[in-house]
Amino acid sequence: MKSGTVAVIGKANAGKSTLVNVLVGEKVAIVSPKPQTTRDRILGVLTREQYQIVFVDTPGIYRRKGGLTDRMMRTTEATAKDVDLILFVHDGHAGIGEDDIELMLRYAHSGIPMLVAYTKIDIMPKERIPEDLKTLYEGGVTADVYPVSARKGQNLKRLEQGVAALLPEGEPLFPEDIVSDRSEKFMVAELMREKILLKYEKEIPHGVAIVVNTFARRENGTYDVDLDIVCEKKNHKAILIGKRGAALKETASFARQDMEKFLGAKVFLTVYVKVREDWRDSPALLKEFGYGEET
Image 1 (spheres, rainbow, N blue to C red):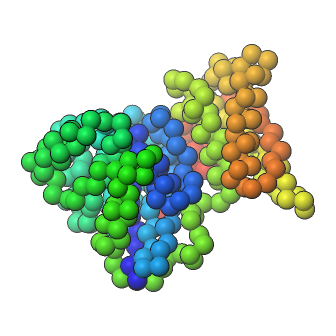
Image 2: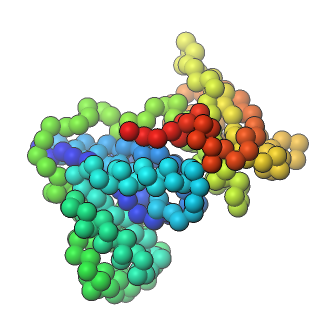
Image 3: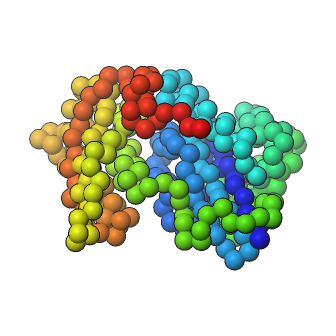
């Protein structure tokens, strides 16, 4: 059978995590319309009778500088060097710029086979698609391009088969019932962060880390989850909590509902908000909060 790893690379907000979730058939990565939603390398495993595709969802390419961002970009670059195929995800709705072509060519010339997923075709004029494909080809991008919509499920089967065709022959890398390499505890933290990304504006979501202090399952199947929302400033803490705790209560309620759906069991969730100034630029705090360097 065919089996291999596929680095899912692209700019922030290109739709990488949404695409991986839909292809795998389960939620393995959180999504939001904000940059830097994905902070870690996350595997999504798709197993068919004739092939197994291990998608490696990576942090979106982002220009902002800082300790956390630098670490995320190193994760993306390291991943792109150690896979069987690169799937470059481009937001078709955003158009094609010279910097997009330059970025694609950088990965296309890396010596690793590459395909392009041209996403969000459900929210753009259809006549623009051939024009953009022509622009890519004239710019030197010779990789096969698949116009797709993850939200509408358009052309995803063709993309999946195109990816599988370029993988090497080999044994499966994971058992067939595995869809991700991440633990339930990790996903619980990510679901909490996802709801913060969706509810709060400006810089607050980007300055938040989630630390799970307790993740325990009772004999009756109920989960006890105790976690900290760590932010960078006291005024951010006040915004996260809201007037009389209303904002935090609403956010935690939405997160708990998704946790229960993900775990398939009732969840008792306890949430605290703490301030650790400038943690995103502190190597020690990055490591403490689970953002240490990946090997």
